[in-house]
Amino acid sequence: MSLIDTALVNTARVRSAMVIGGGISGPVTAAALQRAGIATRVYEAYPGPAHSIGSNLALAPNGVAALDVIGVGDAIRAIAAPFSAQSAAIGAKHVDLPRLAGVEPLRLVDRPDLHRVLHEHAVAQGVEIEYGRRLIGVDERADGVTARFADGSTATADVLIGADGIHSATRSLIDPQAPGPTYLRMLGFGSYTTCDLELPPESMTFAFGHRAYYLYGSMPDGRVMWGANLPHDRKLSLTEARAIPAERWLEILRETYAQDNPGAELARRTRPEDLEVVGGLYIMPRVPNWSRGRMVLTGDAVHAPSNSSGQGASLAIESGIELARCLRDIGDPAAAFAAYEALRRPRVEAVAARVARTNSTKAAGPIARRMMSAVMPVMFRMMNPEKVFGAEQRFRIDWDAPVRPARVSA
Image (cartoon, rainbow, N blue to C red):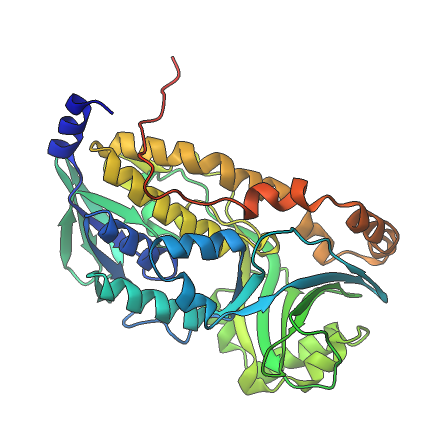
């Protein structure tokens, strides 16, 4: 970058940002923006910290490495359980999944714990978080953007970043024609239980049961973690799903996994008070417009791959940090957003393409299960982990590298 270019960036630089959404990508993006020298405030629709909402989630090696960039990686490693061995089960057949060499293990962390650590870190970096602020509109100007909230309050900054999840309000404000999330016709559940399974330490199994998919793994404290993807044609909001008593959901889960080993035992041993109702499972289709003017999307608001990818939270973390780099180095918001999209869209869409067919196998019928039982073990044994996962899991953000504007096609 020339001295003239540097002077132009410095005089036109973005100095303030507001982040809509305080889940995972919101505080990560805010902390990264603070590190980039951009004063940032987070506006969350919930009336307070959502430290008790959600089940566990996986962080891939690239996601934990991205958290190192903002200085919170080790804090997450301290609370996240490592899973160094993974296997797949189709009926009675088990096959070990090939491992990618030279990367740290997949880590499982309770969403409330991750949420708490990320929020505390962001606040420690100087980020202010306001609760009870549900975005309902925006007013754009040449030199800034004002957010309007349902309680009648407003806020103004140089840029507005929508990190408000898969049901993003910001996405519709940027593009009223933007696609919404696609319901996968499944509901998610999670729990920890105690049972007499002899599981290897740090092991996770992805099981394709007789009627539904589930996963389970051994925790360091001796408990067994398990999660269920229950086929369910009718879309239920989180509120609707949680309005149904846990006892009733357990009846359904026990019936669904009655023919599975160890699925039947896991469901039987789970207590109603330990069942976490996650609600409907969704993915985001391709979003044509990531930004408009001084507004931009990040995290699940713009890319939410299937939970089968193992990359949803990690990609959201990466995108928030990469967005901060772009706003740090490119003074014009539209140009910064274009550079950000050029950096991120190919990566997140490649992950989405990899797992596009996985969800159809989670609720496979009897004939499809028999085919899977014959084909998948061979497929897994022949898998080249470097080819399949190398580019995803070895990716690292170079925070100190300058970001240059994206080239515009003629």
